[in-house]
Image 1 (cartoon, rainbow, N blue to C red):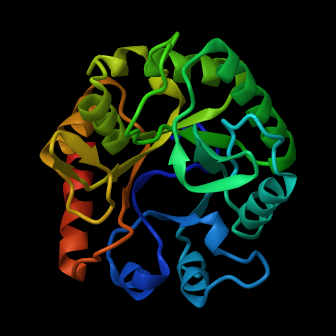
Image 2 (image 1 turned 90 degrees about the horizontal axis):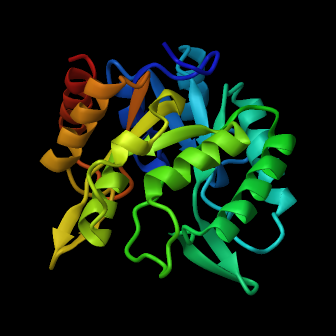
Length: 270
């Protein structure tokens, strides 16, 4: 059962304009997730309206709030996320434990937050400010890092656990990103022991590729066995209410996407 009233259950897929008709055709899609910045609250795409008319929940997922940044929170971006969540009748909204802006520059990429007490304090303040504006619960996603800042004072698991405890935020746990942390940063696979798994409102799973010892979370490749194994270990410890397949490039035929959804459903149901 989902810990958030009306929250997602089952197996979903990321809705993208490039595969809008595919998502409409796929059987057994329990919910979809949309990138909030790609939508206008006053003019939803027809495909999303079709899915919502069928009773398929749509959850807004932001990529630009820069909650981990030291600069003032951009209220216009939070207000946009709130407006999209409202028009979708979404039970929650989400963004990342990351920053995308510094010194007036936009990175165009999710950058990791230093795991220090000082950085955590800034992140907590920004999350609380966003929560006060949203009107729906906020879930926070771990990212796929290619680097780690020096002088970390906490493990990723402890950092996320304290963040959830101090803000009351939910956790959108990306198992592919946990795998990226393991490969790229040597993170202990025991991170699941530290995470507040009861705060996981749903899970992301995506494909990627490892090159020269670096794992790239491409969202353009099929699901990998290590990611599926990690998802299975998570389900064995504390089964999350829902899992969502992300695909953002090199979209395969419908039957291949359907097969990946079926794989996630089988693991989730064990």
